[in-house]
Every structure is written in structure tokens, then in C-alpha cells.
Length: 220
Image 1 (cartoon, rainbow, N blue to C red):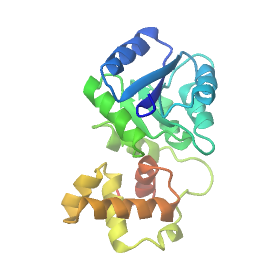
Image 2: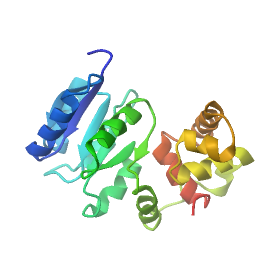
Image 3: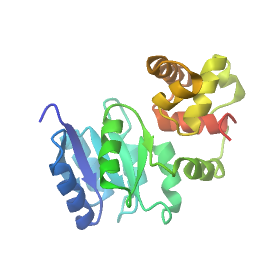
Image 4: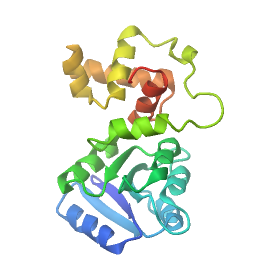
């Protein structure tokens, strides 16, 4: 199993976990290494099993998925977390953006899209379910946290004009390939620009770049 993506399933509904487990059983590159029904159990299993990706529900008894995400993503070598949500019902899911989540899955997504999302996140990228990006970020932007903004204007001082263009397109939910097409550059060049943005803006992943693009006014 060393070449497979190790996945921890976290949901308080056994039927949801069972469905995801059956779905992944037919995928030779994915392996379910554990299941949890609470946030606290997810934290314990994440430490014991060291999965590559955690598919994390938001609403669970006791510790919710947002707090569990904050804990398991703290520190080096942390697993990637995909938030699993009904979205329309989860008002506080936006907090997961600040808690270290690498993306969002909606429970009514097509099964193949869920598997694809797990692979994308495992590869080191981040993903927000199609159709959710703009609404999610706009809601987030309307709920500022107290304290200074996370991206003051001077933070963009070292970002080139081309990188600003790339950041704006990331903020609109475009992939590296789509950015390359839009800017008439190679996919490798687009990827390099994104990588430099990670470094210059001290962003953990693509979800944070999306947030930063909105906070900087680059992705209205």
C-alpha cells in the first residue's frame, strides 16, 4: 500500500463512511486506512495512522470538523484535509478556510469528482468543489475576522505584475492549465508562477491563495 494514497474517513454517519469506503475500494490508487465518527477520534487516528488525506465532515458531536482540522493540520508532515459538507446548511464551514483545510467537497457531488478531489489534494494542490468557489469566498470575505487584515497592501510589494495576474486567476478558481491557456503561457510556467506565489505570500496551499486574492481585491 506504500504507493497508494492513504485516506482517513471522518463522518458521524456510518452510511456515509461506508459509501465512501466502497467507492474507494474500486480505486487501486486509494486506500482507506481508518474511519472516525467524531472530531476527537479523528485527531487520535490522524496521529496514529498518519494518513495522506482526511475526508472530514463538519458537523459532528463534541469536537466539530473545523476544530479537528485545526489540530491535525498544525505542525510539519500534517495530512491534507478535505472538508465534506452539505454546504447550504453549514454556516460555519467558512471557518475551515482558516483552520488548514485544503479544499471542500459537497456531499451530493458525483462520486468520480470526489475521488478526483482526493487525488488532487494528495498531490499537493488544493480544490474547492466546482460551483462553490465564488459563493464560498464571497461569504468568507463578508465575514472578516477581528484584527488586522491578513494581507496588507505592502504584502504584494514583491509580487510581479504577471504574478498578480496569476493570483487573480487563482482567486477565480482556475486551475494551472486554465491559467496557462488564459495567459498564453505553458502549463509549467503557470505552475512556476503559482509556486512563487506560495513562497512570496507565505501561503500554505491554493485555498489560501484564493483567500489572499480576494483580500487583495484581485478577484472581485
